[in-house]
Amino acid sequence: MIRPIHVFAGVAVAALAVSVPGQVAKGSAPPELQFEKVWNDGPATFADMLGKVVLLDFSQTW
Amino acid sequence: MSDEQENLIEETFITKLGAKYPLVKAKGCNEKYGIKGFPTVVVIDANGVVYGEGIPPESVIEELLAGVSLAPKLPKEPRYDPLRTMWDKREHGKLRDYLDKMLAQPNLDAAMREVFEAQKAELGKRIEAQQKRIERFAAGPDYAASEGQLERIMKEWKGFPPEAAAKKELDRFATDATIKKELAAGKALQKLVAAHDTSKAAQVRKLVDELGKFRKKYVGTHAAKQAEEMMGQLRG
Image 1: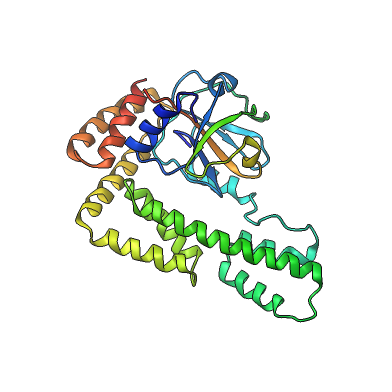
Image 2: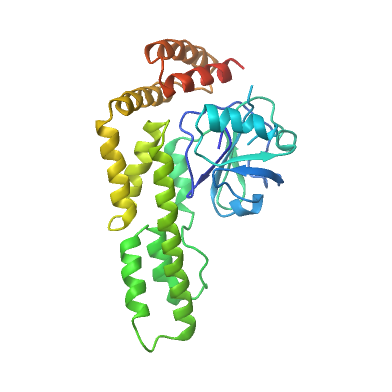
């Protein structure tokens, strides 16, 4: 979402973000992540996103 | 999604950019996903499989969402299929009436009563959640995005308190001069970005130029700040 995580359907859409390529393979299982801190009612754990369409937006503050 | 310090994430995304969407700090996320540049968007479908990278077109998003159930946890028995259907179609009024009708039956099976009562409680929770969403959208600063969300809430929660609450905020949006200015700027920015294919370098360069002009034209607005932020991201 991103910017951070965008969870669809629950989903919030990031209409304005643009993206550059990463390396995660299409069709693969996404690597599980440990969430250390969550804001804005985000999912408490990675597993909480299962069953939803999710946009993971990897961002930096700089 | 970021692996930076909490205070940096809060200050940048929540305080400065006014983010209303879920934010997560996850240690090592960039390494695990092989992220080489920012921002990078990874899409995961409802089956928990990586769909691809980059923000998909709206038509693809709709397609992905078509396979998602909005129903809360329900026993798999066919007798609960009507409930599942109503949740998925966002027929909240019909759902409420159905639950009330079923729960009014004195001889209702105990197991079913328990499920229906839980569903009714879930409906109440979702109504409360909508009210909170409305408050967040109403606070801005991204009024262009908020407007679309409020319109959607009005439609999906017709006959419930969120409908009136969302309408009240939309009416305010339509009359408040400052918000009207923000709305115009926000929509102009959405249109500008949508007109460029950011997977092509030439289009990215053109967009950066256009964003520079946009920033000057709409100086002082939240959209201008977003444009500036995007320019920084696009330039890498």
